[in-house]
Amino acid sequence: MSTPQSSPTRRALIWVLPVVIVLVAIALVALSLTGKTKPQANEPAPTSTTDAQRTPEPEAQPQEPEEVTVDEYVEVLMQNRGPDLSRRIADEPGSFGEVEAPVTMVVYSDYQCKFCSLWTQQTMTVLMSDYVEHGKLRIELRDVNVFGEPSHQAALATHAAEKQGQFWQMHQAMFPDGATLPADQLTAESLTGLAGELGMDTDQFAADMSSEEVVASVTQNEAEGQSIGVSSTPSFLINGIPMTGAQPANVFTAIIDAELALVQ
Image (tube, rainbow, N blue to C red):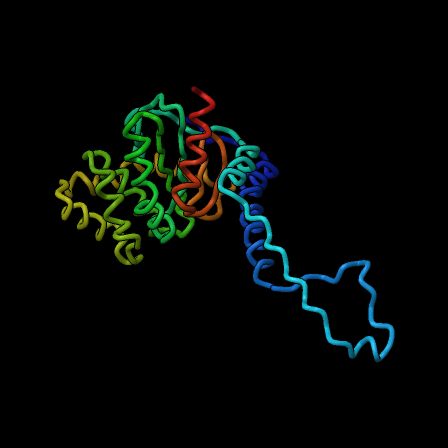
């Protein structure tokens, strides 16, 4: 499959809106903590010493800023829908769920990214049980490896593990309890040892890690991430709707439910 192409402008813009929304939310929180308001435009300033020395009126209490609800957040995200880059290839490494599921989630990740690990442990497991297993969602993991060679080796390892039907086991082993493995454990030698601990044939595993097929598959994912401007992980495309960061599970379920409602 050819690598998707996009203009520099498109690459720059596809992730801008989600980031802006996060910044707005942060600004609202900051505003709520300032505890100050500007004086009213029609409020007269003291005109004399006597006026200035009068007992001050109680300071007006700041109004609480209106909070952005999850539904409002999702509504804005859905207005920034981009291309659907799901591949829907049966048995593709890192894919979970039915090929024809109504909603697809492409996940751009990195095995040295702690937030990717937290998302896997805290949110992906929920989505797997509540949506993937019921045929409503397909998840396609793509390693963009923004943290360099150790990440690249880790991605090769999961794709090699897929050859022995153990992608998920290797994936989970590299994200232990919401953490990540140190870089010195993400070498070909160390990862082959990890494959042995998981019960895999280490000779086959080592051969598959360096095979043209596995290298091409991992390289394709890396190139795709670069082509659409993924510079931080995790990042997501849910039916083409871009989102960044390991946000709470209810944000993801709200988007998925909204997408499911469109096809019912």
